[in-house]
Length: 291
Image (cartoon, rainbow, N blue to C red):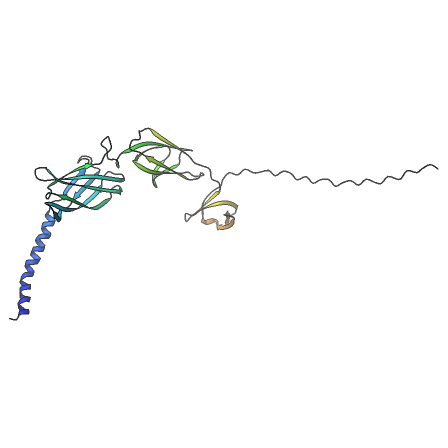
């Protein structure tokens, strides 16, 4: 048997062992129990975190550099703009052997996110402990809400918070800490928005009033969603003429979904009085001197 054939036979003998070892490693990875944490508690969780197997990346002066892939789930039923936790690693005796930071932002209700969590530890943890970064009342800043009463003039305006429909005014909202944008719209009035900042130390019971302005131009809404703002010049059984930015545009009447006409005050023009023509005065005969 030549050398090449011997190498080939050796490889054939080693391949089953290699694949068996790879399979065992894969099965071991699958069987590694993940650590599931629910915050603030199991009875009423808002955030669910599933930590995968902790893999060793390196070792420095007796400390291990570990990495775990974490699946974060928002089970609170509302958007979480930002949250951060200190994650403590515990051994079998519940002794802390390491800690690291884990944070995420802009997680919608029911949404999931996968994160990489890296930490230095004195060993492989068996359990974890979470401590949320909270305010003075122990509530995470990202989850705390403050009630705010929203009023519009006139009432009955469609209300949006950060682009999401939340009903109509008047309404009482529970807004999370941070900056928000309130949007107002009502047929026959100009739409508007206003920024609102909710601070962690804001007391409940606040309110905001927004006055909608009147339309300054006629509004013509087409079936395709286009809204024309201008002056309706004429309307008949077949077409409509709208002046937009000084240009007259004609549309088929069947294209029109809705027309909102602003109230205009008719300005009565003063009557123009033509001056009467001047009357000519007949010449008087010259007086005769007596002879």
